[in-house]
Length: 109
Image (cartoon, rainbow, N blue to C red):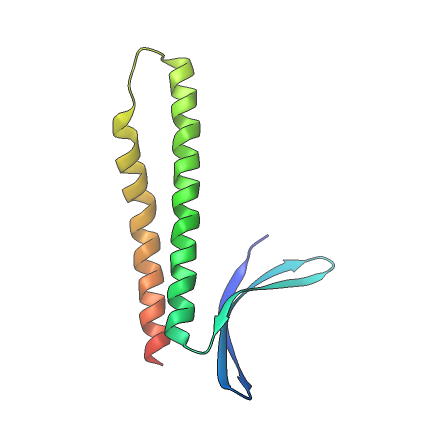
């Protein structure tokens, strides 16, 4: 099952409103969630990116804790301080570069 995240807009009495919408195709229909919305597209996208970074950081910390716990149980005499930086740089760099390119492309339109 894959999620589809997109930015949408609609006209309102106050002008254009933008939203980041997540769609999850299900057998019983499609579930849609508005992740954030506002009248300034740049702010909507920046908020979305910040939230995604926070989720990625939480996920990264969770994975590190699980790996460290497993390694501590298996190898109690070793230290694993060097584990965090390679994981973080390996996962964050491609994600942040892709998201920044998407924001630049959509804001320029």
